[in-house]
Image (cartoon, rainbow, N blue to C red; front, side):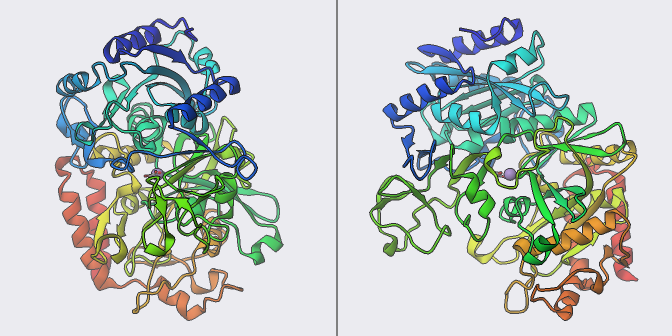
Length: 587
Ligand code: OXD
Ligand code: MN
């Protein structure tokens, strides 16, 4: 039975039903009884496997198709009227042409299947930050995962009322045909269409598709920001909590930083880190003129390999109940395993493809992009403010990347405009292991390259315009945990020790510490980063903070080349910042 009398909702669902022609339609009301019924159903079809309920209560296992294990950026489109509004970093097709193409692919794609109607909220239902969506899907895995990653159910429809203001999402696994796989956004219609995939990043439409690509467009229109950022709070011994949001490209330890455990020295003094979010921040200007951030999600969609009791005990603990594992190793006793979990790969297990797996043969058991979907409230360090409808006030915004030589451990921008420049030049170097070519710089401005739903030049302009509106601006920083010595070894220990850098960042935000000016921005005085019990010497810290002018001159050339792609859309302020950088380096 429909959970609403909202005409806009019902008309759209009817139109989609006529297109995809399912055998039946089922509204997801969010009740545990209905989700349990779907788990049972999923086990019958083989979509879901129940894990060992003593070890992993409420946990299930799912495999996606072997050719369908990651986001497909080359098949992801932004379909706005004008190509220049999608910009040089997005794939584009005219909306009419794309709708026509997709209609053919979706036609009858749910024949013989059930179409599930999932009403979901990004943000706490009823809060001023919340935005609502409906995802239509033929995948039980999607329903069960959306019920972890977002707030799902009838109360969402009640909160929407008669309003036509919801994001429309249509997903069908169809034939899982990689040649006809499309992840498409129509920003002018608040519509997302995803077909021929069953992999989370392509099909859990609340996440990248809505909360970043569509929401970045909404934010631009409504004067707020949708960002690919973690949010964390640092509690000091006085019990005061200071918040920051941070953007990093993938493989730079975002989830680890979001759930950081401070070194013992800090813990003894009473410092704590609270996780508000690990992937997405929706940021608005509060009545007090500060920026306030919420995490619109309700769970973590984390990469499993590398997650361990050592690297990230909080993430691991989050997955111990009511979670779904995808493409990891399935052990004989109904448990899960992945590379980097521990040093004991299981015997008689099945690999991510479902084949008998012998760890001794050198093959990987879990897919490198295998995932867990875990409820945020399972996280031992989830912030008490996680569900606060107002969000948390940001003192700092942090950008970061993986740079072997160029970027120092930390630096602070001179002001907001310079901070936007710092975010726009974000880049990460590929490692030998990943690509074969060491040190290839990939520009990923604000870590939004695959997620910005409009022209990146206009997006930078939006950041600059927001700067005009924010009375009490957060300070903007850049960090780099990945400096290496001449032998390629990391110099900074990273992980929990990053707390020492966060402490300096917060001290800067609250005017508690001085800094030195360098050609690229403020850098810490060597004595101002606490190295007690870190194993890092002052000399090493000096090295971590040096700025090699010759390398930065080359960097400036790379930035100029990257900027040239954006033509007139590049805000002149950023060109001025680049000029300033070049002048500073010549001094
Ligand atoms: C993610 C991503 O899954 O950034 O969070 O790809
Ligand atoms: Mn992400």
